[in-house]
Image (cartoon, helix red, strand yellow):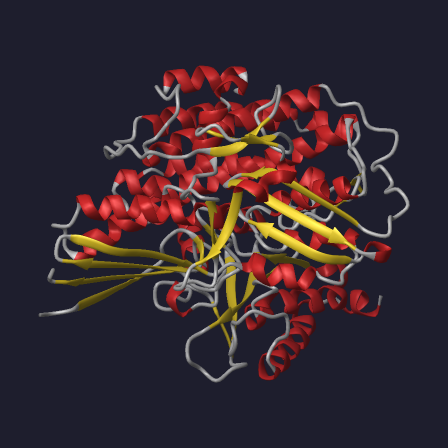
Length: 434
Length: 167
């Protein structure tokens, strides 16, 4: 009877810190446990007692890659609590800012983290050695997303220009128009990206996902919509917790989200794409057809193609929003007199999927309770299932090869393991079956 | 509404980039140095905080001649140890496993990419400050805080113009 534990330690090209343990007994996979350190828990405690107006800037610090998502979910939840409705040009500018974040986050993952997996390179550096033009294209495209965030957010990391009700300062029509040529260049680069990744060799895999995303009456969802799922859920965002719940798992400090009375589900690009295909922008639809991914994509490896299509969509949306922009009379809608108590929830679509915020306010606008459910915590259970299926199919591989495949299966879902100083640690332990 | 990245045109000023995560204690030391250095050197030096993300680092470096990147290190040296060097084949940037880094790709990979794509600034130096505690929290540990002060004084004396220092 021999027990083996192998630890594979190297940079895993996921954001931040995490660990995966796989336990195999004979030919049976006993356990797959993804353990992700999760900063939202810390922030929920940190927010209690703070002024409601601080929430967008405080929560933006949860993630360096998707600060806008945190700001948007916080603003919408708090505005709902205060009975505010933000519309018109301010709403458009928020969507424009979100486009910048989608471009930046997706392009980072496509070019520097995910593409090496398909082209046989251990990392972006080795990829760049053989494909410098591709990496240059990715860096330029990412830079345009970055600059769009700077244009509206004041700066790309932790934008400082967002506030409850709108912005501290809004751009002039001329400022936005001056950005158009960069977006036109980005559209060509984004289309080239779809064509590049569509030809990658993809492993055969089809997973039965319960896709969950927002759905809006006439837009591809970013800031607004109902919660819908491929299994027939349809509900307003403030009833999210009636259908989805977070559960403690013994091996992790993070909570795992599941359907109440059901199992794991998937949020993110695959879910949005499956549930909102009829909301794609014109070029994005053409590119999706060319890439052969019209219809739900259940092969998680092909998520790289869906991300690339969403980049095209975000660039097209940015152009459309700039063309229609008329500066608002004032940069923000002032909050109404504060009620003695209030509560509100919102979901927006972070690049990685639905981000839920709920706040309860007490006297003077003090935050009494905050709840934040990040996309990666919703996807953890489903990522474990992907890994389990992979391991079941790959038992004859040695530990190193198996570990490598597991990492790739995790990377398909671009997990944000943010706010961390480490990287993924992988343990595979095997023992003979009973 | 420009960001802190400075003007789009050529900018000959020295650039100091402080990298880190403000919520992981000593990992924030690079950003702390940047924040304290900026008011002391005025406009003579471009001082920028960064989360170290590779694409943004390369964008920051574009066009810069002299760049000093300040970041936390985790090498086993006594906390607060300050090291400064020009990364090259003999003394590369710290490998990710020994580095208090918050990013999917490491600083070493950023430099590698810059080299491959012809985007390494001619005068690139790293200034590492050895951290002790990379846990969750906002406070630097005492030896790291003292080292940050020393580094700020040294960089201000080295890079700041007297006129800017008075203003």
